[in-house]
Length: 122
Ligand SMILES: [Zn+2]
Ligand SMILES: [Zn+2]
Image (cartoon, rainbow, N blue to C red; front, top):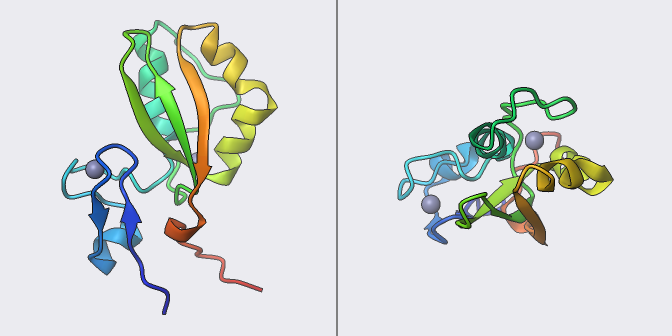
């Protein structure tokens, strides 16, 4: 069994409780910050007045594998984990329309170590 822990992208606290880590739950933030943060990005976009997000399905319950740095319209920066699929959407151009709404997105790093892999390895 790999050690199941994850570092919260927001508060940097490391969750070592296997049951919590598997669900991506940070007890410090009291949020599922270890899961894909597509929904938190959506919330940030809604705050800028966006009403629909074509090509941005949310909420997403996949495990977050990439850390992105999101700076909101109010200038507050926060880390958010995204799954591969949502990270891909950003790389394929979703960043440009989000940035046109006032959000700034920057790729941070992949966090393979904190990825929960439900599909199993080869
Ligand atoms: Zn946290
Ligand atoms: Zn996702």
